Amino acid sequence: MTARYALYFAPPPDSALWKFASRWLGRDAATGETLDPPDGVHPDWTADPCRYGFHATLKPPMALAPGSSESGLLSAVADFAASRRRFAIPPLKLAELGRFLALVPSASSGNLDAFAADCVRAFDPFRAPPPPSELEKRRAHGLTPRQDDYLRRWGYAYVFEEFRFHMTLTGSLDDDARAAARTLLEPAVAPFTRDPLEIDALSVFKQDTRGALFRIIARFGLP
Image (tube, rainbow, N blue to C red; front, side, top):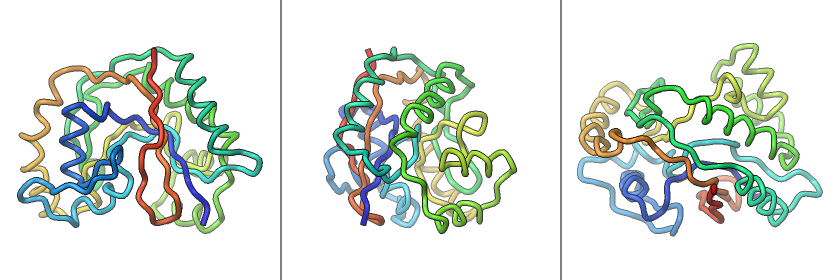
């Protein structure tokens, strides 16, 4: 099976936010360590985001195009990161996005939107076209005409105007489970909702085969 790579924002592995979220999800994607979640957290709540590791998507998982290589991708990401400057976005807040819970910026950020759009464009030459089955799976969730156009052109529906920075903390939950998870999360994430969040690096996550766990293989700091 073909490996997949994704470009994500992930907080520094030694930061309080990373350590909290990794424990909440039950896995540290930087070290590969399995962690005991906080009391009261049901494993079903976090099974899906645990596979990906704590992150915000900038360029979603992709197989590499013919002629591309992991080393070539990493070199391109290093050059891209070196050409950008770190910036801060408004403080995070806990939000319900449909049926799941995530940390999102409390206000919009033009710098963040531009950074995400640049990532989509810059690394698209490395992306192999997704198989038709994957496109149909994404369409099954219901897409607007613009989202469907982005899916066909960029392999992902939620880019450019459709982009929303979010750091997922649960999978899709019914009302009762979502309310229970929110009760636990609200006080736990409070320390991370007070100050702006610095976008200080671009991380490359790798999934060796479909269904495997994603892990960080490189983190490139923004100057």
